[in-house]
Image 1 (cartoon, one colour):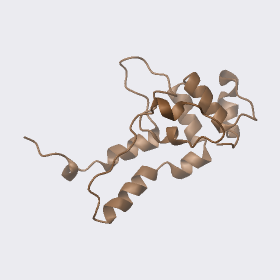
Image 2 (cartoon, helix red, strand yellow):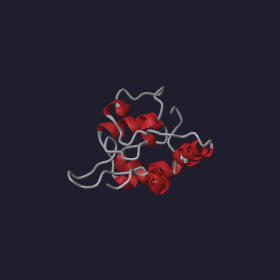
Image 3 (tube, helix red, strand yellow):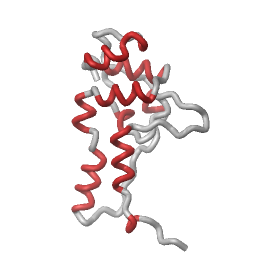
Image 4 (cartoon, one colour):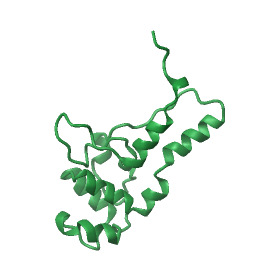
Length: 138
């Protein structure tokens, strides 16, 4: 995460978030964890991130590959950003917080309102649900 934020994101949100052209991705994520941003700003950050855009269908691609083996019995995934994923963020932090379906640690939301989501990950998760994977109805 030592790379700088994308120029389009800094242009769009730099002034309101206090970002400069030299702001690094890890610095932005640390700031968002300390002072959560809006869901629109989060979506823009992800959409303008070449790394995220190149990997946004990781869950879909992995589940498809596992299912094709015919051996997948169960799989688990980090549904919600945990406290640990946003603690002690620095230039060496792996960006696992970007892969959560729900992102309440970096994105503001009203109490009782639906949790903010990471758009591609949550959309793929919903699309991957199959009837044959559900428990039988009693």
